[in-house]
Amino acid sequence: MSDPATTPGPAAHQKIDTSVPHSARIWNYWLGGKDNYPVDEEAGDAYTAVFPGIVTIARSSRAFLRRNITYLVSEAGIRQFLDIGTGLPTADNTHEVAQRIAPESRIVYVDNDPMVLAHARALLYSAPEGATAYVDASVLDPEHVLAAAAKTLDFSRPTALILSNILGHIADYDQARSIVTRLMDALPSGSYLSINDGSRGIDPGFEQAQDGYNKSGAVPYNLRAVDEITSFFDGLELLEPGVVPVPLWRPDTETPESAPVAEHGGLARKP
Image (cartoon, rainbow, N blue to C red; front, side, top):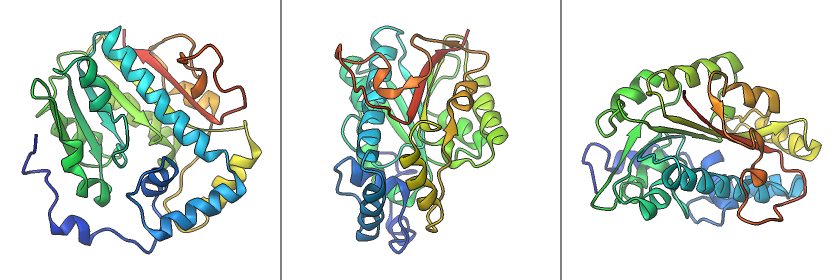
């Protein structure tokens, strides 16, 4: 499926700044993707030199999202997803996981990164029974996000809001909470909220590497205490096991990653 309103043109490529590392491209590099530039590889290598565990965090985060979506489709019966802060396409994107199980699933991706826009064709590929769309917007403008997503999603039906490693880019904690509340207020009872973000107070090496990255001139990402991440779910029904290191959220195996992972996440239902 391709929507002319969101199909990238030459302007999308002209906006890409290859002189400054970008978190989405670095994340793609850590996941083994090819959609990055030398400046991103250099920044990624500098980061891993200080904290090699970031690659585990990146891949554990992706696996957490896959397990969340699998639960939402298979057990909760969700068929609509609003994925904000999409990042660059890699393996097991939201629509791929959801539509493998339920081809009629409808997914709206939201991001304002020009390189993600340049890859919108890949994100817009959909099973014919369902739909995918891409919205060029910022999480800082929830009204725009909701209005644009409503062209594809029916907000009278339960919808899963996915906020994967995006809230850390909002420096002001109260503003981040307000945005989550506004987005969830627009969704009906029976909707779900999935959040995972880097956590502070778990691994000093991670904090050192992230603080150094934030001073590099790249767009900063703010680690938060586990209690702060948990509070994003206030007023919702947290599913077991609650907000935990992402490898421990309903792992596929009986022996999940035992080393501390400073990335926490959870899934909650709106009553």
